[in-house]
Image (cartoon, rainbow, N blue to C red):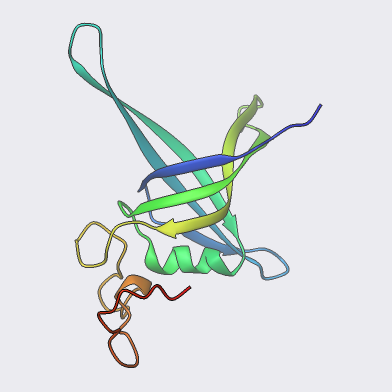
Length: 144
């Protein structure tokens, strides 16, 4: 039987990303994402449920997360579920599911104060980079 393991999340970072390096110097970013689900109950009251998800990303793009994302920044992530288990300090067996991120996207625009841009003193973020060259013409041509 085939299997499929794919996760797509759109939410906000719950804490500052932590960057570390493997023994082979591969960057690793550990961060959390919170997603909200809103619905109206049978009694007519609006309800909200928040899901907190731990995420890990490996490679060069992990450093991008560490540089341009911070607590509260919106993010779109794609990846796969990974199962982790360990022995707790009290000797009990512990486990959790987390997302190993394979791709992410910046969400929102820079300068809104809610993320997507750069933190002060770090220069422009990817959404804020000035355009080099002439302004595009106002024609109806699609460049692809």
